[in-house]
Image (tube, rainbow, N blue to C red; front, side, top):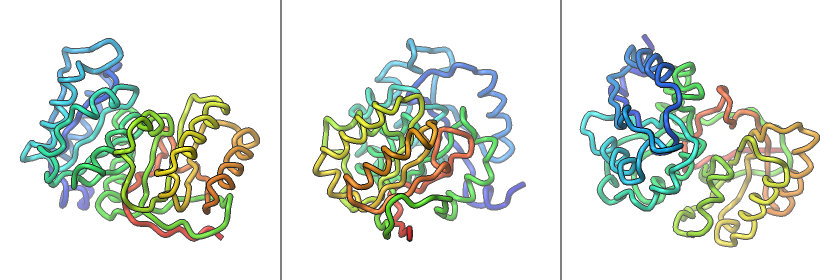
Length: 277
């Protein structure tokens, strides 16, 4: 048994604030593995599916709050992404959960919740693998990073310089869905990290330009980490180089921030200094 896991984290709560669970057999098998490490609690209704969502907006928001209000819970983990977080982000009572001493893990559509929690609460957040894309398969590595808040990626430099700020970002299309409201924008200078999948080049261009046009957010960006976009380097790299010049900040590219199972856990809003020379 991995002592670092058990010494600091005892209870893990599972939530489904976005898409519905498509394969309960797979999830329940993974839960049995989790039980070797943690006490596991479920904050969702297995008997409900709301079209492509896991439940109604109201129920998903309430289950999400309950997971953080549970006295035993140490970590709250999203089972999957998909779509739906944007529909509950304004329904969550952040004042109610603001000072809960918990950790939240998620990525993909959960990028929206990472942004909201980091801005409105004291909950510690990590852009992390989830149940459907590798958290269980990489459990010890991920928990080690969570306990140590270590951040170390392999990267290639696009625009030389010193990336210095708090790590903020995630799934590009999810970030852009927040653009109608500036209240999500962090107060501190940031290193923006972005990734996406199943998006053609012109849509990645469009979404990056939406961030570029948001002057309040753009002025906070002091470096960019471009993650995996599931496109050939010959197709994506010219665009990423162009945007590093648009933003005029140091920029790197990495395959370690991705939707794949090698996704590196990123301590959200952790102050980081990356030398890219």
